[in-house]
Image (tube, rainbow, N blue to C red; front, side, top):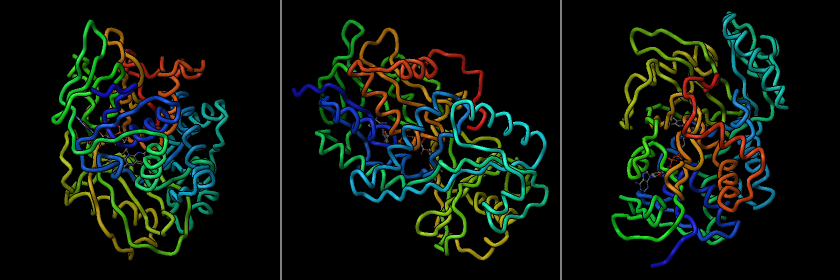
Length: 388
Ligand SMILES: Cc1cc2nc3c(=O)[nH]c(=O)nc-3n(C[C@H](O)[C@H](O)[C@H](O)COP(=O)(O)OP(=O)(O)OC[C@H]3O[C@@H](n4cnc5c(N)ncnc54)[C@H](O)[C@@H]3O)c2cc1C
């Protein structure tokens, strides 16, 4: 039986950049996914937003590194992954949100992020045509951006294979074997593999993998819908996030929604329903489109005649505090969590992959240690991320 240095469960937003980093550092890497090809889990449901402007230092650090990787990829390796540095804009329509954003900006600036709270006039320049009725201002972080999840993960996949990573698709992990509390291998519906290290990067199904080792992970799949329009001439570059909750008796309440215009001129959009919808149902609903189009047209009236191409529904692997769970687990040597990415797995993936590779090769930096401590599965999950 072939022995691998590391087996990664899941070829998605996290598993693929992790395989890229582990294979590059010389580890014999196998990635197993139950789906027929790469990035067919929730990576392909992401709309492609990438920001470092979080409220948790660990996520800021991870995503700063991710942005370096996304933004330099084309120059370094030649693949166009549609990286666009259009910035992120969070809008404030009431004093409470204005104060919340201003407070977060202070914190973000203290971590060296390029972000400012700007007035409604400046927002009108960033988002031409915005209906600024009641708009007080918002944050603008010009170094954040977007990329195509499919193009990026496929580019990472190809590169990881050049470094020697192997992928087995259409194969489901059904058990992880141990001896004396140490990982010894992985069992799938097709074969058995030897390894001393397993990374759980199973996204919305991460809890099932944890259960194989009696590790009860607080990761709950939460369904979110998104959509894409026809292409129109590019007229704004930023990701727009409206955090104003809305009551809609006919189609359902929503907490927030966000959208941006991609490299082809298509607008990608996504909404957070209120209350959240838990479960793994990926069937689109008839309520999403009327709910979000009403909000988007009210905010940006020039969108009213644009045609929607399609909508879809996918999963955020949610944790109680909105932050990922990363790192080793006491009592099961060789098992590593890379789970609970919430709505940010695509942007976290590349930075996280490199950290995990350093963890396996015992090259962790002091910053890595701090991140791993913050994102440990044993932590106080009561303190929620401000901008999850
Ligand atoms: C509508 C929507 C919009 C989003 N927008 C963004 C965004 O703009 N930016 C962003 O950063 N994130 C966004 N996300 C979140 C992002 O998609 C997720 O956080 C991310 O995909 C999670 O990455 P992952 O690698 O953990 O999971 P996935 O990408 O889902 O990969 C997990 C893989 O594990 C495999 N797997 C599971 N169990 C097994 C098993 N037993 N055996 C073998 N394989 C298994 C699955 O088949 C899957 O391919 C969005 C999500 C949705 C739904």
